[in-house]
Image (cartoon, rainbow, N blue to C red; front, side):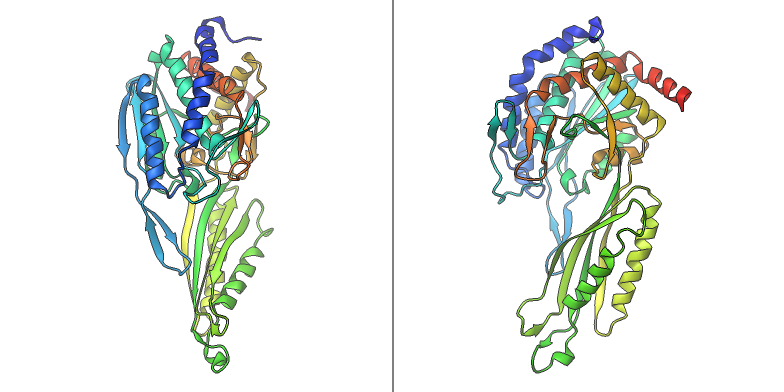
Length: 415
């Protein structure tokens, strides 16, 4: 089955855009944009602003709050972040669509993974090629196809290029929440699964740090006067990890630990960072209750103090009827393009969680096909540029034709 003939001229135009999508992805991936490399993220923003000039729209550069991190010594450090870029067009149109893609990567400015290489004629390996530089090109070309079509006047849109998704979007979360008050649905360009499957329901996430302080003493002469912060922290982490398996859908990962120094000194400082994932929003209360209990147990020890920092930043993404209708529309558009589109739950989270928490249905994995993200083996399939851009373009044109209402009514009839 092929796409409706009246959409075809603008879908076929995308066949001629592959080389530009590839060249621009390579350009962006060649700029280090680790989340805490504000200068690099801003360079990406400037390049994207240039790419977006053909779309029209009103552009704004939006500063975000600094990122706060508990460092290895247990002190709060503040890191400036790159600026966000928002572009809006036709805010008066009957249907408002939010587009989002992040500019940052997990690869810091001093990381060894800095360049793109070809693995074969269809596969490139490079920092952010799949997550999410390639997805940004899919987004922009799909929008350009819409803008060239007669369907554009029915859709108003806004793009948010945010600088901090890989650290949980702490600075850009208010911008996403603000946009949710203006839009009807969202399209986000994280990479799809390696086999092309979309992410459906997502777990929520929280990032936490714990700092333990004890009392230093000579390990030989006055060991009995010391209070060992490393031992207290190890007890905390052990008990924390033991919470795994006690609550369905909740996983806890102690991911970083630091403490002590010279082995002839009883250590008076230690810290850890950990992540919690959960399937249900109500599980947050259980997790916090357990954390408070563990913290209280350590604080009851003589000469030991423990401080807990952080919290839950992203709610679980659960699929509403409207979200299922949007997925069904994507499946229908995929079938018309010869693509098998399906979705499945995942433990990962992204800005789709933030948007869903505000009540906005969204698909958040409309980007390129690839895999091994967040590693130096990250790759993408360059053949996915055109097919994924066509998928988004057809979704947009059918949305302009009222397809969302049709699929939502169908979803309600079968619920």
